[in-house]
Length: 283
Ligand code: ZN
Image (cartoon, rainbow, N blue to C red; front, top):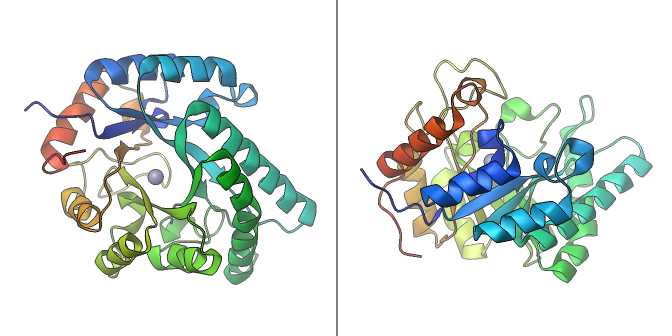
């Protein structure tokens, strides 16, 4: 089955063993339309090639950049740490603008032992402090609700409804939601929340992968679409029906797939996009 991959982007973390240059070269050659760039491939302090080189690579590839990943982590006990998080997110917005990215994805954070209600307040305050900068550089911020198994230390926002609450509180055109099937597939209100987000203009991103049964690791055992139990095509229909016409972003963290030959793996990703995502949409 041959696929139209022009509306599909791949997250660089999906092919973790590859450099940014290798990711971009292979994605473009395979016909993918975009690359979502993780900061570890860019920032020298995280092992990346540096912003100027990253911009040269990405722009040279001709690929669109739906997302720069990942900002957030706003809650902190000490005020100076909260300010540091805000400054870091502003830096990420600058880098995203240079890369031509549409949005910075926010994994909002949580602090073990801090009440989730307090953490959510830190998140709203932190995002509010970043929004003027987002507007200035023309890059959106998208809250990614994370599965509740991450509520202790990674995200105090776990459902679409919780992300919507922040969007409704801050009411800013640069703030929306990234829907990742891995995190929200179980939500009984998913259909209604996606529809609401569509109406409110906050559907900014759509990430695809699968939930393996049994899952073997909380972070690094995601499946490729078709490996697990998520109705990816069904959820994709929901976001399309709600008016989302952005990229399907393939985001898979998997020790098993990282151990594969990455070119063979990318061919498998292309196959699964063709067989598991449903009908191609017209851009
Ligand atoms: Zn995601």
